[in-house]
Image (cartoon, rainbow, N blue to C red; front, side):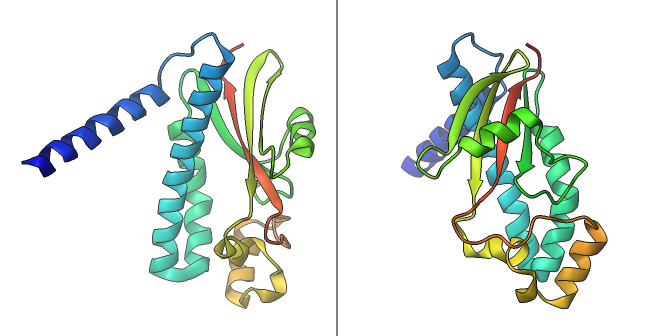
Length: 185
């Protein structure tokens, strides 16, 4: 019986957290930052889950194929009426969706491992930017030194992303950022 109560409590808590992530915006900056941070965590968890399954099912080549399809779907599904989420790169793989604006590029330049997030206003919209630092060796499989990649992986990257610049990263380097912005000013 205790296990059932714990399960119900966890389910209720997860439901509450999910609901709060998609709630209407509050007027204060702290609330915006909290909602933006929660949305980023949810996005990261969702994408990571898909990538881990893909790696297990077919290795890095399959993960790249899944990422090329799933990341844009997750981005669209997780953006709400009030908050828009996206990823941008310091060196871009997907030039259709992940190129930072000039304003976001300036924010990226200010990020450090000690200060990995910035809350600001861009074009009249509250904007929260959280850096993506390569802190997991598995990320280097697809974003590291191309000479260390299999021919199959390099071919898949070139096929899906002919102008890919998102390789050659080293552990600890800033890969890009999650950007959460108010949908309307």
